Structures are given as C-alpha cells and as structure tokens.
Image (cartoon, rainbow, N blue to C red; front, side, top):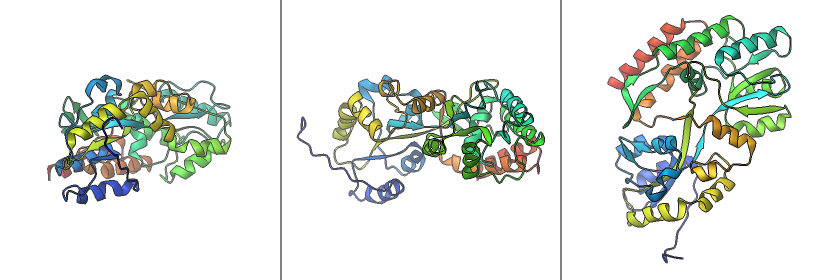
Length: 348
C-alpha cells in the first residue's frame, strides 16, 4: 500500500521454478523475483539471469554463511531467508551424554554393542557424501578451498590430510564391525533401525523429524561431533533472487530491503515453513528445541558449493566412500583416486 504497487505471487513446484525462469526471464515474461536454492547460482549467474543485489542496512542481521552461499565470484545475488543442515541425533535412553568427538563415537559404539544395548551404536546411510561431509571437516578435510571470493575449484581437498583421516576413521569402523561393509544401508533402513531402538546414534536433517517423532523413540538433537576441529555440515540455503530482466530492478530491490528484510516478515516465513531462519533476530528466537538444535548445529556450517565444478565432485566422492565401506580400496587410495578424477573432470 505504501508504494501503490500490487505484488503478484505465483506458486510453482520448487523444481519447476528454475527451469521456467531460464526460459521466461530472457523472453521478458518472467518474474522480477524468484525464490530458490543457493546452489542454483552457478547456472543462473553463468547464464546472465540474475541481478546483483544489496542487503542494505540489514546486512549484519543475516547469518554470514547464508550470505556467503548467495555470493558468487564475490558478488551477492540473493537475500537468504532459511537454512538447512544435518545434525547429530541420539537415543536418550541409551546415550546419556552425546559424544564430543568421532573417536568417542567409535568408542561408545563399541561399548554399547559389547553390552548388548543395541545392534549398532552408530549407523549411517552408506555411500552418501553429503552426510559424510561434517565427519570429513571434523578431521580437517574439505572439498574445495575457500577464499574471500568463494570456493576455489583449483584447490580440491578430497585427498587432503584431513579428508584421508576421516576416511581412515570410516574404514576402521567397518573393520571393527561397527558399520556394515555391504554399503546397503539406505536412509529408510537407517531410520528404521534408529526408530526401533536398534541403533543409538545417527546424522540426519530436520526433514527426518516427523519420522523420528512418529517412531516414539526418545531422542535429542545436538551439534555434530568434532575431532581436530568442530564439524562443519553443508548448509542448504533458500532465498530471494532478482531477475536480470526485471522491468524495475530498483523496485524489486526496495521490496526485498524494506518489506522482506525485517523481523515480522521473516518470522511469518519461518512460521509457514519452520526451518532455521537466515535472519538472525528470528533464528535466535526459535522456540522449537529441535529446530533450535539444528540451527545450532548449522552455526559452523559451510554453504554447499554453488560453483559449476561441484557437479564433478559428487559421484567420484560418493564412490570413494562406497569403496572404503565395501573394503574394496584403502582409504588413502580411494580418496586420492577420487580427487584425481575430480581434477581431471574440472580441467576438461
């Protein structure tokens, strides 16, 4: 009302927003603003579809890692509103105090299994690099080096000392019989075991809360164990992006800065979709203890790389983890081979 401008909101399936925007934007038929994930940036920016934005006076009220997620080559292209990450979840009837390190996880798993308290102390979905990443970072590993400009695709860290140390921990967990060697543990199998009380500890995301709550198992959510440093899970970030083809980009920018970037609007967004807010005044006031715990676990998180080179990483990285779990390759060889595959793919 203040500006005398009507705002038209069009709802689409999340997966359709980006594809439709790539066609409609250049044709002058697209929206002024889209809502989407930060890892769309690589494709959208490289194709000239997004306009640079500013957070204005509210810049210091956003989670820095969320802002970094919407920054590409040092330029900000999105206003973040929500984040998503995994955390450590444990059965409070079986585990009285959550382990602080992954060494403690392996020791506790061994003790619980020896005592017959559970079939598996810790269970994880196998071959999945997304959920393995915080373990990797806890040991000092990384995927790409991070500079002031963002992720550096010339600095591949899959075979760094810390990454190999994490892979060695995984290998030893399998060798000691605490993790299955057949790599057949899926998301559903993992949660079925946890929900039945057959496994005591998992790493999972807030999307699993309905399943966990429905199981009736007593649980708590906490930060992911560290090792040589604190664990850093990947952050998935949702936000607002302005079209390069907007008929009035200044008005679109004003809408974001003056209408969206405030506690009332950000609280309304959180209430409609309760994921940790990227807007600190709302994030710090979360009342749901589980969502607050996921937010705390994500405080040290790293934005999932949005650079195009990330597409060369997932398969090679996941295959290395699977080969280690299946005991088909030594951890150092598996990670080194994966890193070389990634470097070759990026260089092509």
